[in-house]
Length: 117
Image: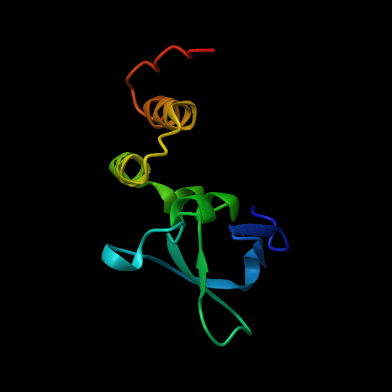
């Protein structure tokens, strides 16, 4: 059973109690970018908060693993979007991208790539 009082990191230095979060909405298109990933509705807060973490990550932190059974495609697309944005900005962090790619691969049946450390 999930702990209803756990504090969930939303990113951008924002946190919420898991039992107060009642809706998550993935940002798409032009709404997404610059670290903006998810719109989070919290009980007692009149407007949704924009989180820098994906709804899947927030759900996992909330202990809702059953609700997170989403294809790896979402994570792969997020990785591709980060790579494209970093390339456009001329700031590609290969170490970070490699780590993220290994994590995506580890969640599939495909063997992970060896670390370059």
